[in-house]
Amino acid sequence: MDALAQQLGNREAAGSYTLDCSVETLRSAVEKAGFALFDADLKGVKGKQNLLNALAAASQFPPGFGANWDALADALCDLSWHRANGYVLLLRNASDTLGLSANDREIAQDIFADTVVYWRQHNKAFWVFFS
Image (cartoon, rainbow, N blue to C red; front, side):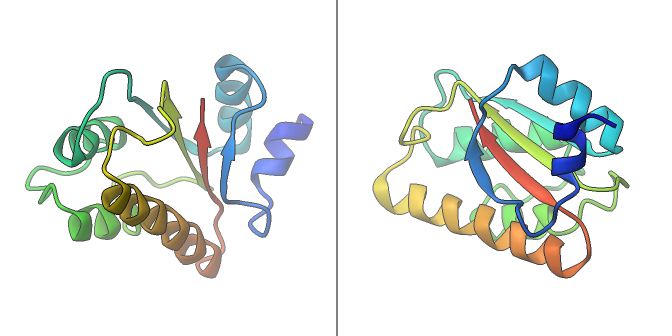
């Protein structure tokens, strides 16, 4: 297993990071690690609803996803429809603001951080990469 695939398995290091390798390198490492990759292209995404829709599509949230912050938190901490050794959320073409107001950006970042902690407590790594 290559170094990045091994690193992905490190629950304690998991968190939100800027991607410092190619997307293809990440894809390969995710596959080798037996992780699920949720690849969300955020190019041109503006506003909470558009971000939630992009995340729901990338993560293949079940029908009936509530498209609000609570539903996002619930879905990211469930993922029962994606059994995997761990999870990687790739936010491609993400602007510094994620296309959100300051308040909404803080809520999204808090949800991502809480998701990392949730999965760590359940013996899995959850990574968020911005590219």
